[in-house]
Length: 477
Ligand code: ATP
Ligand code: MN
Image 1: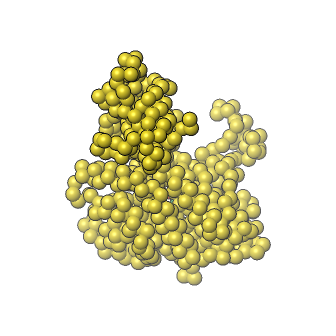
Image 2: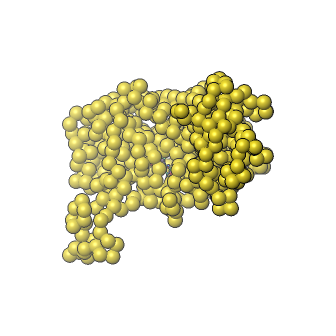
Image 3: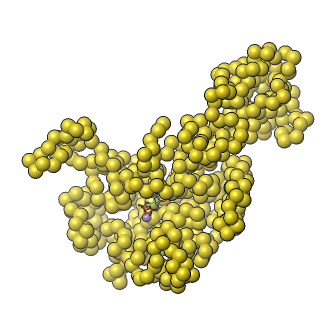
């Protein structure tokens, strides 16, 4: 007989029919009721066994975590809490789970403990819900772009340029650490290395994506990126997934429109398609919030926050306006910010971003037209000569979720900016070529996928929304 998933059976009305299901035991009580889960849904199916006809030996092996196959009759449930259940006629233990050793017991475990058991934590309700939502979000990402005329481009993970400018990089080499050849100047001779030059893991696919946008028109990347920064925060990973659309002929306004439309679409997709998981995560967060002091509690539940973002425009504010607001804000006057805002030109820290979003505007904010001095070389210089067409999308609880810009399309201006920052033209000759041959206005942004999953699931720590997190001092699994 073909195997059904728990999801199919819970939605089915094939009463009094024979069904087969396989999964892992979540709980077993009264030597009679098994809660079985197979990952297809957050809900378990109740399997009722006939105590008389089950051997003592089998009963002892129905432990939390064991894999079992169940054959039986689907019936309407008499008990509370479920609509259907299986009256078991045959039960086979597929894989035992020793209750003295299995770490995931049917009780509340701390997120820290589960992080140490990242290979098993997805067998809990919280992590299975997060990972199903993550999967649905990534499908929605592709669907949005594919439905809107974008092409998916796979940019290289090993990059030959260290001028991407987004952060510290991990070196890629095939030299053995203590046996790298030294050149005449006493430096490591990368000419003898695998690629014949220094290479790194990419921090962004943007520069390569730009070359593709200048031929395919609308493109996006969705792949892993790496940052070798020692930032031990709840929002930074050393390996994370980034989504980077890049569009020829788009200016900054069109870029802002795209970021809003895109984020709304993917959030709406999961609101429609992941209802049960989101309901669970909503309740989980409400529970967690109760343990916080009143002043730190969020005013909205998870579902309210998601619906709010889907139904409201983001507030667009220039950097200059934002600085005025921050300078005159209560926490700044009372010296509550760790980094006080004194003058125009200051880089915004996450405390400032969160003040703007959570306290001042109380909605997602897009900041634009930042000082050129605090942004990357490829952003388009404004007529004022001191700001660039940059944009950051700021979200409650997360801070920056998107960073993007209209790109500098004028060859002479781009070269000047590179010279000022000591970026070697020879290294980026191919990037400069896009400005030499058929240059055009274009724009794009980078969205950190895990930050999006964090916002969508309400998980406080970014380590809990990627299966096997990579962070400083941590690459187990
Ligand atoms: P932040 O200031 O938050 O460190 P950033 O300005 O360095 O971010 P960008 O280089 O603009 O980030 O990268 C684009 C997007 O990638 C960010 O908006 C964010 O969503 C995400 N991102 C950046 N760094 C990380 C990281 N270490 N871990 C996870 N996501 C990240
Ligand atoms: Mn940024």
